[in-house]
Image (cartoon, rainbow, N blue to C red; front, side):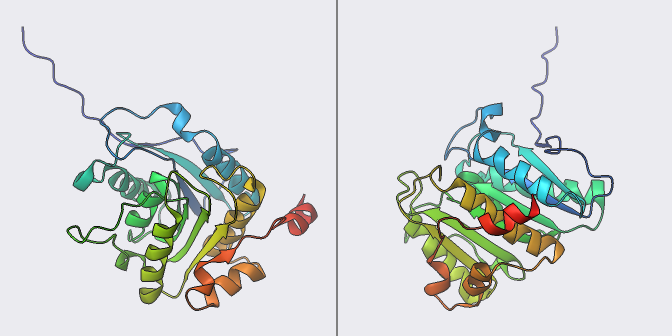
Length: 256
């Protein structure tokens, strides 16, 4: 009796969050968190919480423009060193968007390890913007090459991090943002003071900020004044921009 071949794992796009737009003119790829090392399959719970909330918010905000928000289902839970599985799956997802929808702008929006994947895969030609929320980044190591930033040239980049994050170091995301800003002026970073990794205390503000940024990057909507100021300000001001309590409440109430 012959041996049965082990099936090859493949990444895939999840169903669009919210109703499918009749005509797709822009796509957000939602990249959930992961682990530093793991060969296990991700679970459905990985796409819960902030990732799903972000997808729902963006799908509502961009429905009239034809925004499709797809969660990305990774092959593995882990980044796994030089394999960088999550980043490779994010790049595959961007390529799959091109295959399905043609020449439409793509935003990679990741949380935790998914934030790192979004930053790494941001160089794909279809990607015009990246959102990295509480991104997991490796500790600085003189023996290892630094996290790449050149792939972000020509993209608009938003990083958001809680100052009390105990799982992913906010200082590391600041250092990466500072290096990226030298190569690309379209980089900004917001700090959520006194909030932790899940950004639970200021979730509304974080989602409103992401909506403002993504709708501007994908569809040219006017950016809010705080985002404009953060993009225009030199380091470190535009990379330590405080996210104000109540951000987005006035214009979100007018839209609803």
